[in-house]
Amino acid sequence: MKKFKFLIRSTYLIVLLEIFYYLRIAPQVVGTHFVSDNIPDSLGSKYQLFLWELLILIMGESIILIEKNWRVKNKLDNLPKLLPREYRLLIVPVVIIILSGFMMFEQISV
Image (cartoon, rainbow, N blue to C red; front, side):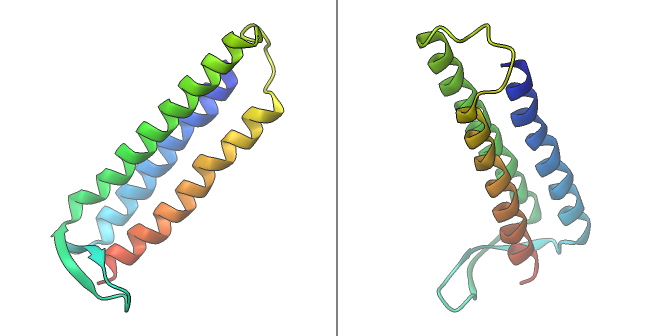
């Protein structure tokens, strides 16, 4: 379980580095909501990019809590290795990191 927690929580760092990179190149005003033809209809501060970090944090801690409860319920909480179920759950943060990178890039390229 420690390895699983470490891997999930390391995604926070990856997204934080991604945010700091985009903050350096972002204008002061970024698009926060887009209509169907990719034109922003709402603008906000570039510091709203930190909302992605909050999303990753909530999602990651939720996954850890769900998996910990599942392990305790099935009496697998002392098992030192990752379970196949946990490998599948690790895909979720990776997909979110990729999508958030594209979304942040879209927000700053207004």
